[in-house]
Image 1 (cartoon, rainbow, N blue to C red):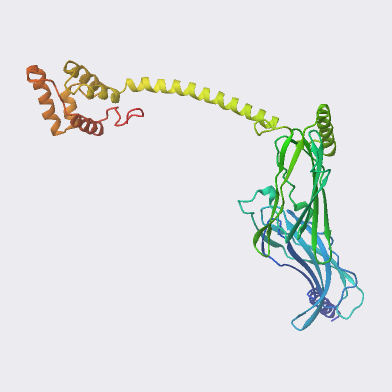
Image 2 (image 1 turned 30 degrees about the vertical axis):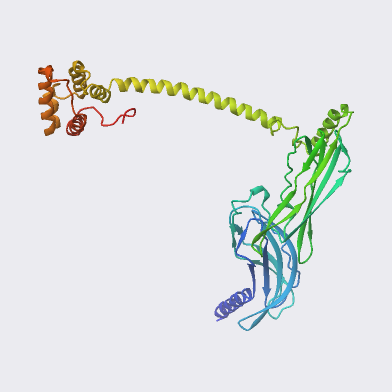
Length: 442
């Protein structure tokens, strides 16, 4: 009897544990199921209990492979399911995918403290969210991968150190460009692409980035600079700078443009300082960005010295390969030509060249040279005619014999079409090694 009651109590407490376990759960949701690379996804991680939480729910800054994640805020909510009211906490994150592959948000374990029904002392529980997948659309192929940006707004501004209206050869102007980008993180703002300008040396400075976040919004700032060393006198045009981004809600490209600027560079009698200034700027760039050669030197035919050297190497390699190709091609063609001139097709062509009545004395030698290359069972004209089995050929052979026996009747003229047709029929009906077409003379 005692044993029976013990089993009943055990089953009761086990069932009670199951029912209790079903009164706390976690979930995950996203405001978008498909996004572009770099487009923000609002991710909500929720924890619910049918009682209350005795300790705050904190997942921390979650790590998602292939994406940057930023925690925003926690929101207290309540939810009614099958007549039971659940107290909940929602943790809101912004996720920014940076790879062109589907984003897999793994199952997350959330540690909470919540008392059982009728209790007041919190008990530690591990709630698990399901795995979630966000489909990633690749950027449009028309946009450079290194310049792709998804944002809700971009503001661009520039500052100059020095007077662009008064510049001499050998002097330096420093330009700083700042972009305030809304709806993304600093890591996803692409760097400025500085244009190469003839007669001007470009010496970039180290960039600085900063992500700004409130409880409801995120933005980032990227500031980059460059020093222009003017090496030649005359009018210099600093090209306009265009920044393009994709607006996720408007679903279109927008852009901001910094206008171009013309600088009239005046001559400078003291050019001895130009080389030392150039060297000094190169040292500064190397110290600010070690391992990177970011200087844009004087151009040669529109190319940097390194690009020009690579071009010369490429031309030299191409010339060498072309020489080898021509050399081996000539050997190959020569061998194939020798093979062709010893072929049945070539002999047949030689035979056809003398059937116009002008070279009657050469018809028979050419004819039997060709027939021997056909390799019939018996290298005779009759054997060839038997293999071709073409009625017009018999009349043609009779006419050939008649004309050869009686040269007084005029020159020997044969019909090429009949001989061509006969050759085709012979080759198709026998095992002769000849070919209907040749790679040189099809």
